[in-house]
Image (tube, rainbow, N blue to C red; front, top):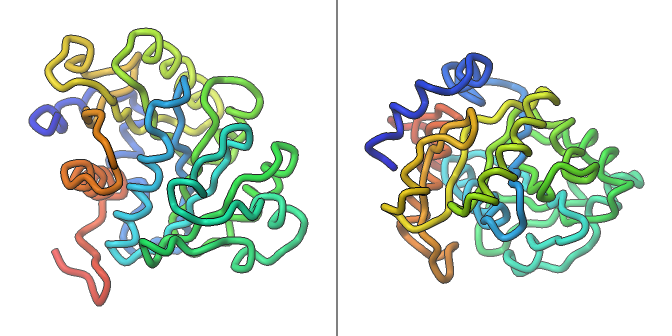
Length: 249
């Protein structure tokens, strides 16, 4: 989708376009917004994409926090190789933010807040506003109460979908709800076979497809997917290449 990436950005709705134009987070901003990673169905790549974006942000010198907001199907701790410490519950119960999170051992600079109970998630998401870097939330799939909870706290949403028609429709519904909750979608990452008719469509509902990625084994170790996450971070956050040790263009 690289060749059509810029053209797809032109058809995003006016509200979404303003976010993309000014950058989701700009250079020098003191407050880092929260991005919900959302999709219509489980298994569309939300958790892997959230981890990939967090790693790309850390590579650029930021201090991202990734929150596992999917209490029923938590997976961040498994993919990151850490213990599920119910960080969401701990934070909601009064533990200091820095003490409730865990580092991602394989990727220094990324902090992780493991999933807890749904009833604790609202309080925890209110408290992560104090985090000094970008906050990503791996959200539950669908449009139910648990799925919409992170959308009520986020400033924007990134959609994930497979190229299956049913999944695309479910993701369209999720992103429609995100707009209603003032977390406008910035775009969709579509997982499917490159070149297929469904994967060539440049929107999911009103939302542009920013990237189409293949299904691969060991996605966190896949170089092409790594470049995709780098591209998304540079585009959505409108950042120069701000690697550790300084800022360079």
